[in-house]
Structure formats: C-alpha cells, structure tokens
Image (cartoon, one colour):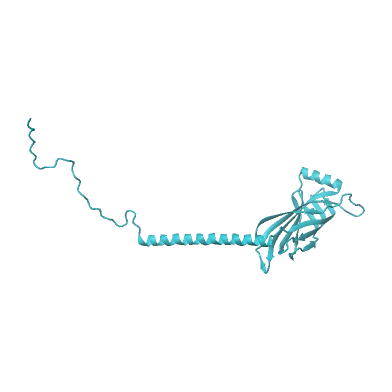
Length: 241
C-alpha cells in the first residue's frame, strides 16, 4: 500500500479568526429608554383620568340618547303651529322726496299647540314686518303659555314711519303694487319655545316663523277688490337659547 504523507508539525497555536473579548455593559442613569418613576407615575395617572372622562362622556351621551328616544315615543312632540288669519292695511305711502314710508298695519295671528300631552311656553316674541327685503317695523309681543290643544289669538299693530331706501327695481315694484292696491309684505317672528312635560320644563329653544303676505290696501271710501287670504307660515328651529 502507498504510504501516507507525513503530517506537518503543529506547535499548538490557533490560526483561526481572532476572538473578540467580551465587554461588560454599564447602565448610565438618564440614558436610553428607562423611565423616571415620578414621570411614569404622572403619565399613568393622566392617561387614567383621560380614559375615565371619555367613558363618563360616552355614558352620558348614550343615556341622553335613550332618554330622548323614550321621550319621543311617549309624547311625540309636534311643531307649534302659527298662521295669519287676517291683515288690515289702511296706510302704505312712500314719500317721493325723503324715502319715508308711512304705514298702518294690523295683523291678526293665531298660535296653536297641536300636542295632546305637552304644554308650550312662548317667550321673547319679536314680530317684524319687511317690504322688498327691508324691515320697516318691529313689535314685541308678551309671552304666554298654551296648554294641550289650545289656541291663542293676538293682533299686534304696526304703525308709524320709517326711512326705506329703494333701488330702481324696488321703486318700480312699489309703484306697480300701488296701482293694484295690493302689497307683498313679509312677516317674521323670532321667539323662544320650551315644552312642559308633566311637572318639568325643557330648556328654551330658538324658533322662527316666516309668512309671505299679500295685503290689500283698505281706506275710507274705497274697498279693494282683492280679499286677504289666511296664510300658514313656515316654521324652523335656529338654535338653543
């Protein structure tokens, strides 16, 4: 058999890659992600408070929604009704020299509570009359209470004079309506409404009515061929008091 080649003599030394020595790591206070106990405690308390507040608010919102839903199904509140029964206009004259409007208008109006289980409080009633988008008179109406299925009639008087500046188109409109003795007058009411539920009273809510009236001019010695027609008015909520 052929003989094996002789092995080289090894002196016991290690000829592999160098071995890195292990180094000890030292913790330096204030470095890295280590949290200060006081800071961690304050942060934890703040988070707990915020979560608690959010849970309370959510609970209140859910509770209020449930109460509102129950209230709606039990009482079924209807929108307060309002309409103009009659309007009498005995003066509506525009001065040709100083744009002063002289007017005398009586509006007979009816408030009606259509609810069977709810009473309604009417407060801070402000009635305004407008012509061609310009207000010429405002009257305050005393507040009152309407029980279930009740009505109330009032007849505020709008009388006086007011400077009203018309442009060319508004002036032409006035002259045209003057020839027919029928004027398009807008009546707007702003008021505050609250409901009476059993012995409780709800918060006040702001409401408004808008009425488009066609009012014939009536004066001594002449009767207009146009009769005033009763007008139902548009209702809208416009905020909470």
